[in-house]
Length: 554
Image (cartoon, rainbow, N blue to C red; front, side, top):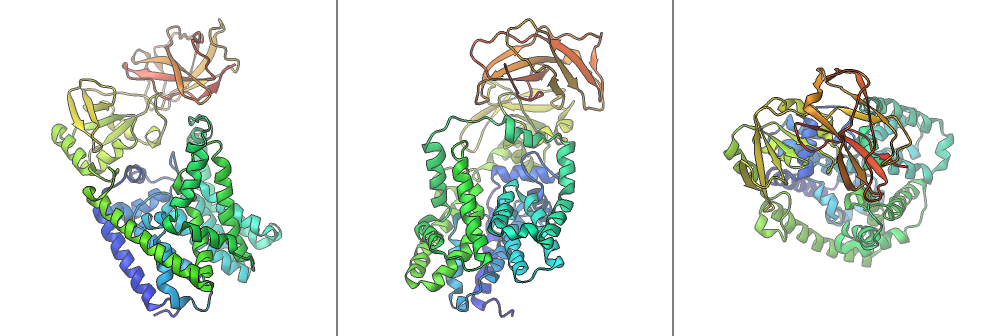
């Protein structure tokens, strides 16, 4: 046995691994996990919403198991690895006496608990943040090229996990500005950039589509204190449950004695401050804050070892958290025990019932990157999310799912069909309708680009735009029509118009494969007061797609 790990801690972690393996096997997928499973069907250097690490760990899991465990297996291992690394970063001479207290501290943290068996982008982020800090601690003890290169690889792994990881890197740099003149630190940066090159190439090849969406096209909301800042503050409490007063008190009372402690403090406060400021412009989700759990485990446990009163309180309240979390984890499997309907409930049921009605007919879900992969996961049937102007782009805008359903007999499911060929009930009780299409055909990867910059609704000016056809075949113009949508300042739809007067200088009947085709049109008069516009293309009467970029009006 390694003397660094007390026998009690190893027993606890062994039990935790077993618990998480059982939980991972019997808890149905949540929608985000199904979406990342869809990522993993086409291994790549990047995906629409996230870097590729979450897809990679799902793909590796599938090499060992089928079903839910085939998505989550690696996550259960990373969770135990995280706890071992955290333990190794604590140097207090009395830590072995309080292995149980350490376990209770970590296991009582809500999202640290959940990410022990769920496969989400934060799962690898937590692990690689911990590993990065451990290596950084070693680097502070002795600078060397080998340790610098490992740091570089881990920085790349962090960024392959989630873009928010840049906060971890910058927090460490802020805590130790002398790194800017450290040749080994620059070697680490060069190494990180080298290993991140494939993702940069992927971003370029995909025309930065995901980045454009999250930075420029994502709808925003008017600031509301309750929904934004108050919700952010409540999320800070939700991370730690009943132990939160003592967690943040320990952070407040921490005295910086060395560069590593300074890094932990800067990381904790830095993430909190960044998302506090962000809360004034956007909604902050709880999981965005989870990375502060890593430095706080180390800081709080060291504080516990020196303060008996707080140690006892954190231990008792941590046990209370654990009892509640275990009950909720049981409720994830057995719905009657859970206080509300949750997305891990009933997915096998609704997918099975729909599959019984339609057999292996492929399914197109309108505007749902959640239902499409969930149905495919539990039935093995190919699906597609057809995204239109009322929704957003996602991985289905990039992958090959559209080709899988083109010219196929499909069921088209929409929330807006009032009386369809079939109906079924979702796990949340919502009844959806679907219609059959004998020869389904869409061209959602056609790209529209307006060349003019002076865009005035209702003017007589002819506006030029190009349509690029990325497909390996020509697209008949008779199969499509153009439309335009006006958006308000929050990028919400306020008006939609069919473009009746789209013209081309050339006599054309098709959009040539891998070519641009130029058209002109006049902007319709506005009824309300739009701020942005977007072009869309409809195929065979379907709702307009997200073919153009959001552009500001004059």
